[in-house]
Length: 206
Image 1 (cartoon, rainbow, N blue to C red):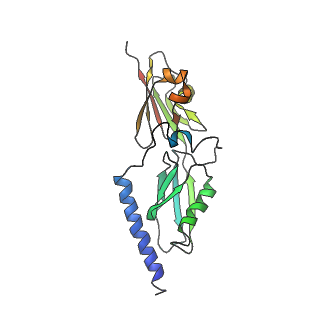
Image 2: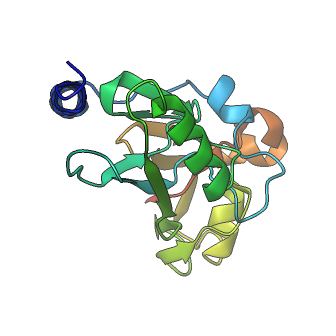
Image 3: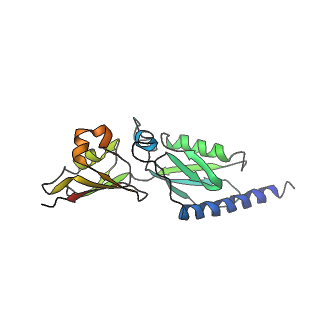
């Protein structure tokens, strides 16, 4: 019986991984509406070495009975990531080393006697295009909003429709922002921007 235990655990890992991969294809990550949990938590007041909402991270598993592929996840707006065997971990607000330790604790000793976890953050960028003075890809270096991102790109040009700005999240969610309202009431209308977001300023039609 003891000799079959590692094989049973390995088979459980493989089945769980297959189910997880299918779920990733058929069910998109849930999105918290603007003004909800995601809009005001997860990134506030953190240094650049912390995992943030919108970050794409790679999670690797080693020292287990079978080879596991590297898992690539984008941190959802609720701050969570989903890993094989249905394990969900709060990633936002943690350094890479802290997240590695927390992931390991979810699997050891419940599924494995030994496990080494590696977490790597990909480059953080945002995209600003349309009617701005310097449309381009920009590094995401800290707390950002729609207006701040547009300022990084040189601000609106003379043909910009400041009431018609589109934000496309990394997961494909599209949002509309009225920057005229945002300039008057940034707390209510100036949405937060996360790594991987695309901001597009539409043209003003006269």
